[in-house]
Amino acid sequence: MRNAVKLASTASLACALAACGSDGQNQAVAREPHWNSSSARALNEAIAQRAAHGLDHIAFKAAGDPDTTEGSAQLTQEALRFAAALAQGASDPTKLFEVYTIPRPQADLRAGLAKALAEDKLDDWLASLAPQEGPYQLLSKAYLELEKQKAAPSPGIPVTDEAIRPGDDDARVPAIARQLIASDYLAGEPASGNRYTPAMAAAVKRMQTDYGIKPDGVIGKDALEILNLSVADRLRALAVAMERLRWLERNPPATRIDVNTAAGRLAYWRDGKQVDTRKVVVGEPGRETPQLGSPIFRLVANPTWTVPRSIQEKEFAGKGSGYLQAHNMAWKDGWIVQQSGPKNSLGLVKFDMQNTHAIYLHDTPAKALFDEVQRQRSHGCVRVDDALGFAQLIAQNEGVEAEWHKARATGKESFVKLPKQIPVRLLYQTVLFDDAGNPVIRADPYDWDERVAVKLGFAKRPGHVLKSKSDDIGP
Image (cartoon, rainbow, N blue to C red):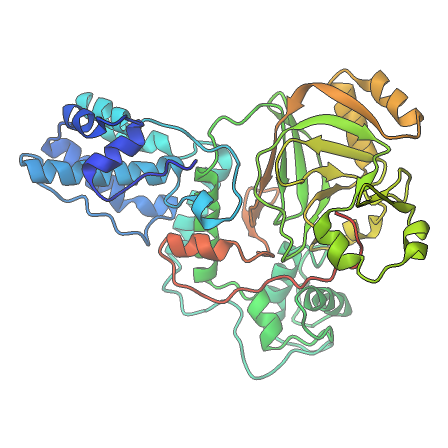
């Protein structure tokens, strides 16, 4: 949402939040909330407890005398600022990222504040603004519990001059194993002893390869910097995760598809219930899949692929007619077009979406990429594991199964329009939850959390961006 909250003055803030017209300042004055000592105290108490939202690194100045014009104006300004942080986020994602079109919450906060003050229910109103669903509450609980450990002497996994080599016994091994499991590099339960096992070494090698470190399995400083999550690091990740949830509308469409590009996972929701989840491959660093809100409006059977200029100019430089012929490609009206077939870069189905960024979901012949831990390997589009099975599920649920089967049987590019578009949200969330509801902090492959954390008042720190290593030409 481009009409972000302005904090320069009480009048301009009121105008932005109330969406007022050219006489907005006069409207703001007319609707000036009335404060008393009880409501001022409630505001100060709510702000004092802002750590429950990961906002404790942001300063708010709520103190003010409600019986004076100046004090009342200060209370109003800080109340609206704090309310905006809870209701819509303390930062604006459309300013933090080049592309962000996911629907955001809308609220007339000034009217809500006036009503809450009139009814002497400011604390209840403020408590209602942040997301109420389970994930946000779990993040909040974990953040508050970690806050109590902030003064603990341990910085996470201790970094020493002594590297850990396969076969070594080291007291740091259990903590390393737990983080490898949380990051999906290691399967199963952590070993009970301190021995650095061959299975752990293989997991470390995979991680080193993903991040451009020599894959020798030796856990030195570089590997520990990726694995080592101190209490401060965890607090930072949880705060960012809460902020990203505050950016989202509180009641998303009951039928939708959510793609978490940070984790490489897709979730299909129908009538408010999650009915399917599967792996996806998304854009590699430098070709990141943008954070879009964009609906699927049709299924495309046996799609052709018109190679985008960006891929054509870089990936096809120096390629001759023999290469094009071998990949079932030909020039058409100044574009390189790949014909339908199982080796087509879009596979056998495309989930066509409406956006100006040429981003969509599709099948792929490069099935091996779904076995990667970090699946940020495409040119920006979203490749779906068992895409044909997913298309069948959607066609069946949307009542176009017969049309879909007929389209597939043609062997040619054919289109099946959905009776109702399915909203898709391409999200970026680096904190997941295990079966017990505990937050699990995953990798930040695009290093996108850093800019959010800084806006939340956390100090800058170097990140670890996933190394690009995709060598196929697909989108």
